[in-house]
Length: 245
Image 1 (cartoon, one colour):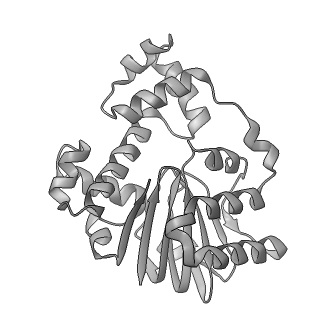
Image 2: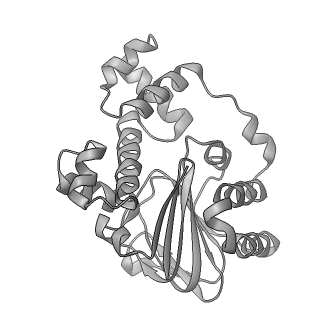
């Protein structure tokens, strides 16, 4: 069984057997094997096999897979939990008591993920790092740019920069410092979520691509592989695709 849950603050992937191609997406990733193990590495010939939870920082190229039930949580860097987790500096397995706590949290929330995915993600992030880090305030200029991109991902950088009184270069740098990715990449992520939402409601891949604002189906496919390591057809094959409102 494979279940994919997509939320504004990230997502959850539940599978008993899975493998991605090499990819890098802006969301941080936490793989938690419930039974069995996960394989994670920068490419196919450098995989690390472990039964421990494995943390992958944003924008790091990786290949990931599991054998046995595994839950993978994605944390969007623009969301509160994602900003909190930005303090974790590098990828790798998580050992010791924290690992057992993470596995217990994932197991405990598995039956109600579709309803309580955000709560489970929040509990995981608080266990990983100091809660005080979440008190950082978002730059007002970044908030304005983010809200404009949320409403229209086709916005040009020059327009965003003028809206907040910055040069395009400075606007891109400030935006990336807070969200973890430049505006162009953020806009692609928003389009990807919109396309997945359309697919979850029964749209074909071509129709979903058009509704989300991609140039064509091929552009949607390339973006899905880049961010998620799987083509859009993978999500049609999944047993459940749910966009959490």
